[in-house]
Length: 379
Image (cartoon, rainbow, N blue to C red; front, side, top):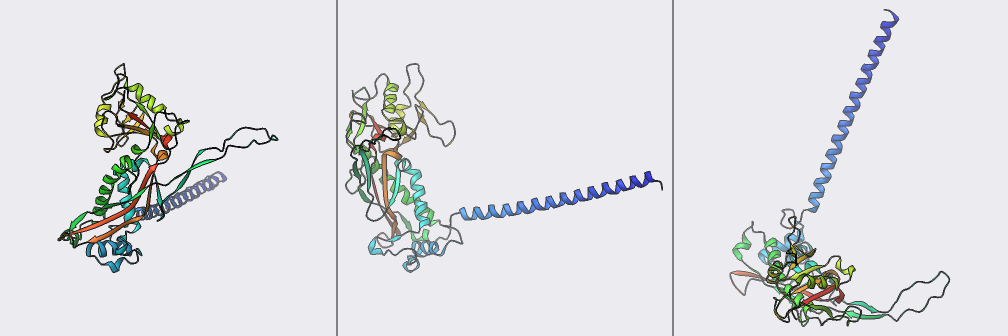
């Protein structure tokens, strides 16, 4: 064999070795990718399992099963002692945290003002907050210049009036005995619906006596923010004693811009469905509608670029009423609720139905009156 043939053979063998090594590398990479995909699938499965609510599942925590199957279905108080130290004399048993969170989640979806406002959890002593109303002025000075004295700080205390919110849904014993009946889902939905009805009225028109103080019951004034008494809400007139004047768009624009820009970010219009029906018909001088429907499913309808929220407890368009509110309610209205929802099972009052008497202490009050503006029907 000549030298040239030997060289070609060596080159072929080297090429085969390279190909073989490449095949092994590709196989190793494929194996590694498969392992990575398997690990990722396991992590995703664990994440989904962790995010899945425990209530209603067959492997729920013992305290959840004790509360739902033991107490709610059969009235066995001994099975929920580990959940709460409360006793029936104190108004019932505190529901487990998972059930309470489910009630709170459904409540936020159907209670319009709660969905907009600032919500804080409090202890048994209630909630108090100091609000600065003046003083502590700021300014500019050079690096070595003396610092002038600032104004004396002024504060006022916000203590939302509270009351006991209650609901009393009922189910037949036959429903409770049915293993396929989702009792915790039904109870959370019923309690949230009843709470939402009561809250919707109180957060708008509440008197502040054994219930929250609604934002429409706060003092009102036409004065601007700088000179208005703290706690009073500014309003503008509609221009007509019975409804809107000939230029409703101008009135609504004025309403929007009575509010400082810091509050306008996140602000919404609030009105009931009857008022909204009238507002949807309003047009500018060139014939364009002021109201714009949400372009994507799930997005709110808009009025002059701001979301519109329906709250049925807002008044209709009548002389002297405040049918439209515009505000950043997360800045302007405070909801304070204490503790978990308490439930007392009552199978005796209305046999063969079992009532679940649910209570919770809830308070509310205007927090920053500069963050809420009102439209009043007047000339």
